Image (cartoon, rainbow, N blue to C red):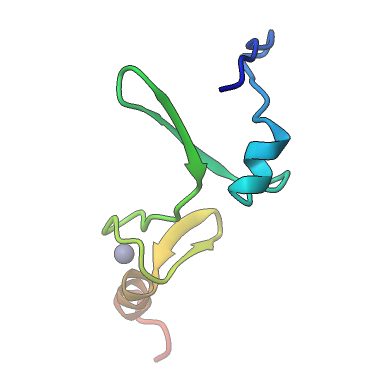
Length: 81
Ligand SMILES: [Zn+2]
C-alpha cells in the first residue's frame, strides 16, 4: 500500500508502478466510482448513451453510442434516402 496526500485541487497521483502494472499511461480517461467505502478507479469503459450497452461503442460528436443505436438513428432520420 502507498499513502498519498490529496492535493488542493482534490487530486491524487496514482503511483507510477501501479500505472505501469495496469497499463494506464498518462492521458488515459478513467471512471471513478465508490461503493460507499472505497474509491475505485479504472480505465473508462465506453457505454452507449441510449441502450447502456458496451459492445461496438464509439464516441461520435462527444456522445458515446453503439453501432445498433447509431443505425436506428440513421434510419429514423431518413438518412441515406
Ligand atoms: Zn446503444
